[in-house]
Image 1: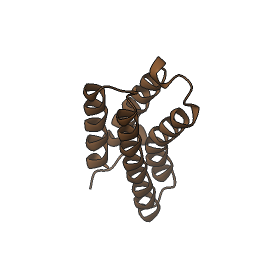
Image 2: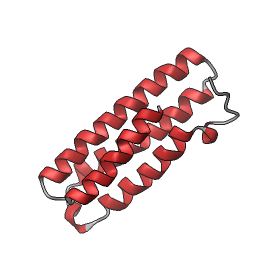
Image 3: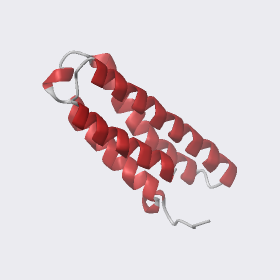
Amino acid sequence: MATFKSFEDIEAWQLARVLAKDIFLVTKEKTFANDFKLINQMRSSSGSIMDNIAEGFERGGNREFIQFLSIAKGSCGELRSQLYRSLDIEYISNEKFNELFQKCIEVSSKI
C-alpha cells in the first residue's frame, strides 16, 4: 500500500477536486437556473467525495480512513444518480453526461 504524506498526494482526491469544479461549473449553466435543490445536491455530493478522502486521511488511522473512503465512494454513486436526473430533465447533454459520468467512474475506481 502506498504511503502518502498528505491527502493532496492521493490521486483519487486530485481527481475528485477536478470533478467538484466541473460540477460547480455545469450547475452554473442556465439550464439549471432555478433548480436550487438539485444544484445544492450535486455540489454537495461532489464536494463530499474530496472532503471525505481528506478527512479520513487526516484522522490518521487505517480503519477510519477506510470508513471515510467508503463514504466518499457512496457520494460518488450519489453524484452519478444526480447526473442521470440532470440528463433525464435535459439540464445536460448526452455528451456532458458521458464526460462527467466517466470522471465519476474513474474517481470511484481510484478510491
